[in-house]
Length: 101
Image 1 (cartoon, rainbow, N blue to C red):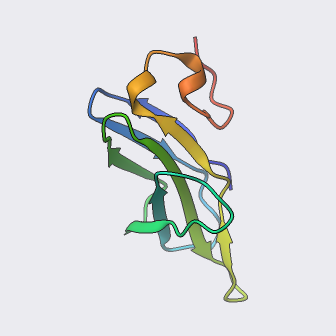
Image 2 (cartoon, rainbow, N blue to C red; image 1 turned 120 degrees about the vertical axis):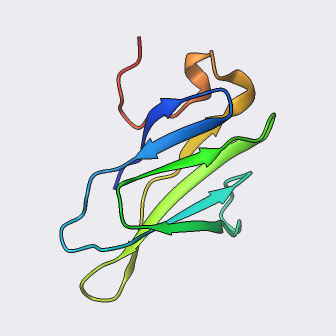
């Protein structure tokens, strides 16, 4: 599952992902760093395939989404990185393949 930036505003960023067949609920996680031992914090559980996250100034936002598959296994998305203090710079967002102009 690949995350994408849907919309960026001054105080929030909206992420989206493709619906997974048969999945009713997704868990959205946030961290301020991405290391092998880092524990992401559960932000929310949603049934839709997008989420709007309030941004913190000068703090990187590492975001992951998970769901439980038919076998009961947890499947995690790729990590999406957004840095709010550099919103106007193209390299501030790992846009998950979304085209930017």
